[in-house]
Length: 125
Image (cartoon, rainbow, N blue to C red; front, side):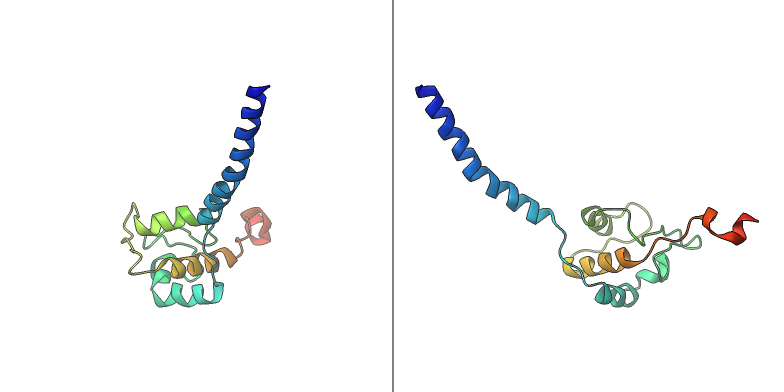
């Protein structure tokens, strides 16, 4: 009986103190809320479009990949912008603050996916 009481107290303490920790972790993992309109201004103003195109479609001439709409999570997007692996220069949080990056991400997420080739009648002739 004593072990049942101890076990019950342990479970109660784990539930009482465990959930707030898990909830705090979830909220810190969530990307900051982004403003797509401001993100579009930043995307153009910071020169992102020069390599990635105005719609984030990428470019064969610059070698920049498609980034709109992003297929990465915000965290993956942020990590890549901060420490890119190809020709793209790194942008620290001093150059593009996290909130600005969240706005750019929101803008890129607002761009609709292009139609698939099979859905374009002219390409199916």
